[in-house]
Length: 580
Image (cartoon, rainbow, N blue to C red; front, side, top):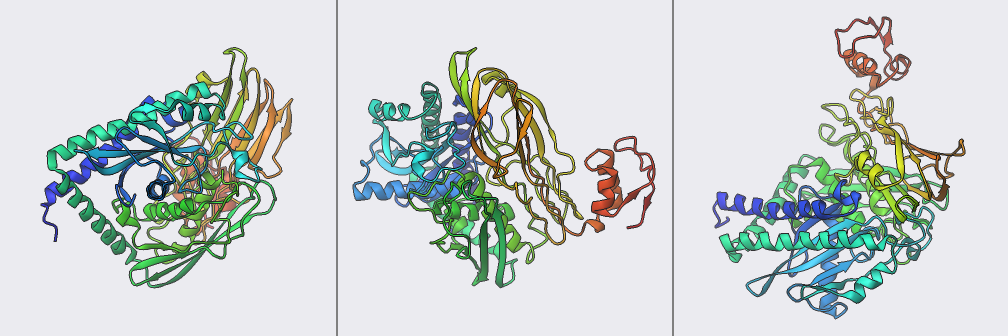
């Protein structure tokens, strides 16, 4: 039984969360790159001083970073103990982006600051930001056909970028010498450091108010409660073994799909995840490092049980067998640029597919499950400088037992979607001709999937190269319990008026783009939930009136025949609906 009264317990926990939220806001508001400042592709958290385990993370951060930042901090602590990294001092900030050391892909750059309170190390503050370029073969870092990690960019082990409050000019020079548009990175670096300093200041205020011992006791209590709550949720799943699978279109090098196969066993109140039947390591960049694989399971379970508070205790009932010998356990020098952005979402999709049968009232059909990574890098003659535009995009969520899927939702792994097109047009020499809902893309079902988006963007001046690392181009997000799959992702590049479709459908790199050339993308819709012929006919009529589906699609997908004029959107039902 906790000796801390419930009110103090709740206030301190909320205070720790607030520290992380303020770090998130500081990072976004201070960052230079639109992918951080506008799309919020970043996260901040507090980690245990001795173990590196998660204490609290900002609600505005990417869920996929929950696990990876914990594993990265653990690795940093281990490096320090082994003498592979310099010991911490007040004012230090470490930088690391090595995927094999608790990371994701090279573009996700992690900073870690030792936080001292009254001269003693109390915790670590850490954050991750997606840098728009980290060097490598293609602008933006998303090499669609890399066969070694060195082709993907600069790889940094844990090193001190800031020493006793002063940035190390030699480390900074090494970074700038290996990345594009290096002069612009200082804005993101200083924003990342500023976020950590804000966290240190606010955490000091919290400790001054309640005392270090009380805060430490609260952290321990909340960890135990999170584990208890997760087990209470897991109790809704009957004992047994459940299987699911999902597919990655290809690895970008060999045009064959990669299988993610998961077996989930519920026993003794915990869940055990086995991915050993998945495809072997691949040649291209769709391998996943183990930190990302584990984090993908964590985020999938948080999607299913969002009410559970998030800290290291949340993950205690989740046991993941290391899938050695598969592409979900990448080892050096396997390329990994697609692991966090794409493979992680297929892992979550496989977990959803496995658990939808035992808990159909909770689990959804598959979401779009692609970050839609599109990079355009080149030279802008009007501004007389190079540029790298990195864009992510939303898609449809899967239908569920209660309602239709969300349209243009963020990717499964986070809160990020496309930056405002007005911002992109201001920063880069591009013009968007379309950005709108992709009608008909949601999978049919009793509750249909949400819709993806269509966008077309033109290069206005200069020259550039386009690269894509997307997924769900071969098969759309899977429906559940009789629901139909959502429509797959599409990519078409129009050069000199001629249409070009990548061999790997949603993956390609170094496509030369000239002024007037257009890139057209359609993002996936979510899977449908339940038999489409069980859908309420009034909802089918509503969707047709809104032009979500055509009358022909209503008949083909839902078995509904419309026999009257469809005029007023959302108006009274004037059409006659005949039987199915």
